[in-house]
Each structure stands twice: as C-alpha cells, then as structure tokens.
Image 1: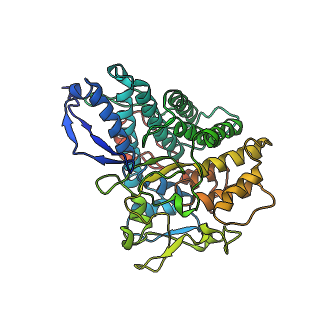
Image 2: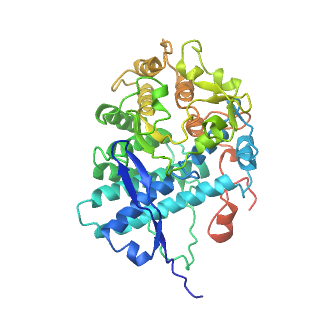
Image 3: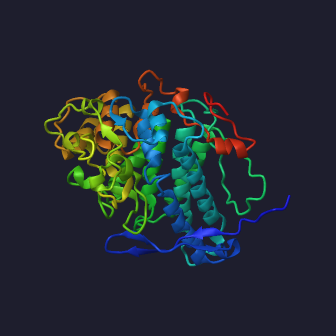
Length: 451
C-alpha cells in the first residue's frame, strides 16, 4: 500500500498580553512536517499549540469535566438540554458512538501526540529553553492521561497490582499516518506509572513561575491529585503541602473571587486561557443562561446539591447561584463570564488534599485536618466544624469543588455508590469510541458495551 505522509502540522502562534496574562491566538498556518520540526521557534510554537488543543471544548475547555460531573450525578443537578449525548452520560446509559466521549478520546490523543513531537525534538531547542519545554510537554501529556485512565479504565485500587485495562500509552510522536497505528491498551498500573514519571520529570525541569504556562507547582499539584487517587496519602500530603507552602498561591479572599476571572487569580495553580479572540469555555455553553452567553442553562441545580450543606444560612457556596431568565432553573454562578479562564488546578483543592491525607495518615503536616477544613470553610463564611470524618471530607469536596469535574473521580476513589450503581459499575466507565474500535485492531472494548 502506498504510504501517505502526514504532510502538515497545525502550528499556532501566540502573543502574551502581559498586563492580563492572557493568550491571544494568531491565525493558524499549515506547514510541512519537515519545516515544523526543523527549527526551535517552530517546535516551541507546537508546544504553545498543544496548550490550545488541551484547552479546546472537547478536553479541558469543559467537556471532560462536565462528563465527570454528569456521570457522578444523582440528585445534585439535572440535564435539561436537547443534546442526546450528555443526556446519555447523565442517565449512565452511554452508547459507543456518543460524540462527547469520542471527542474527549480523540482530542486527548491529539494533545498527547503534539506533546510527544515536542519531546522527540528537544535537541532542536538550543537556546536554553529545552528543559522548560520538556517539563511543559510532559505536564500536558500527564494531564491528558490522568483523565483518560480515570474515565476509560476501572478505578485504581490501592495495595494491588492494577492489571485492569487502562488506555494505550503512545509515547512517541506520529508523523506518518499511512502505517498501521494499531496499539493495545496498557494496564491501569502502567498508565499511572507513566503519569507519575512525567510529573516528576516536569517538576524537576519547570521553573517556579512560568507566566500562564505550567510551572513546577502546577506539576506538583497534579501529582498530589494522582497520589490521592491512588490512595498514596503520605505522598499526596507532602506534595500538596509543598505547593501550599512554597508556590506563592493562596485562597482568594472570597469564594466568588476564585471564579469568572479574565486573568489567573491568586488561587489558580494552572488555568487554560480564554479570551474574546480564542479559547473554549463549554462550562458557559451548558451551565450558563443566555444572559451570560450560554444555551439557557442546560444543567441546573437540584435539591440534592443544596441538601449537602450544613450551614445554608451563612455558607457563600450555598447561595452562589442565580435563577435563569430563560427557564427559571437555578444555575451555578461559577460560570457567568464567557471569556473567563478555566481553572484546572486551584489551591483550595490542595488544602482539601492535604487535610484528607493528614486525616488518613494520622498526621498534622501544615495544619491539623480539622483546622484546615475549617480554614477553607471560613473563606465562605461557613461555621466551623467540631470534628471530621471521611464522609465529611467527601461532602466538603462537593461543597467546595462542585461542577468543576471532580465528582465521579471522588466517588470512585472513596468507593461511593451512584444511585443504585456501585463505584466500579460498568456503566461508570466510558466506552472506547466505536471509531477507535473500527480502526484499531488491537483495541479491546470495555465490559458492558457492544462493539
């Protein structure tokens, strides 16, 4: 068969608005592979384009997080939109041709491939920027693989070798799409090991600050979340503690101050940049009313969410909502600025990671678990607690991090039920997209789905 060379790579050129720390996207150019990978400038532009790809709506521009919340949802919110694909996810009855699932899978591997191309061509970067470029590329690759393995593989189980199927590890860039690219799924254990390796490399190579791009504390914050998901609480605690102590980030003075920001807030450890010229924000599309640029509020809040609160009268998180003028439904106020940056890692999460990990380990690194939970609650004017339990940590994460893409991952990690479904139910693992099954002869479908 005639080999068809992959002849163009999308290279996006960006300029940074220093006063707002936002990325403006210049028009894309299609150039040959040989040219794209022949100069330092172009390799670094591929890296910037990798950020853009990762921030598209079908990845961290909102869809991967919305899937996580709809999949974990029972009574906290409802799906009222006309799109069938999110409705399937909310109902835990997903078909193999679900376009949201297919787009997350496809876009994630596009990001991974672009990151791989940067890593494969680091020798071209001779100006002293190679370490930072490698760190950023490995951070982005780890970010994509962490969500892929959590969505498409059975949950990680602490204390065993996790031989259950994860996702394929592609660790070199593809420049020739005319060959057989079939690849088998790696185990969950293998994928987590690669994520941890990438993040440790990223932490060692990234600077302490890096403008709007990933820095070493973004890598360490993601590493803390990976360790927490594994049940490696001592490592999660220590990573989160280092971020809290040394990153220079802190809780915003008010809960509302953590959201709808045009530039990264003091709380943002890493955020994807959105401007009126570029960047995607599907949180706005599905969570916001038309007044704020959304469809009308396809996802509205239900009694189950409000029932989580123990101090509804004072807790700002309870009242951080508004009524849609389109439908009359109650919507979250986290997404009312259609050009706001999308926060992926924020310092509040690190406080909750450290507090829970300290509790599980019987330690008080940084703060005692009770004092730390109460410090987070105090920011929202919630009354102080007198005691903490594991169930309280699960509940507090929902109060603080609701509608940000954490729900199903916390449910699986803490082995909670979703309605009548167990945390490890087949229905809570996404299907391998049918398009992947049709083109990859080595791919195995997840149990419970028809090929």
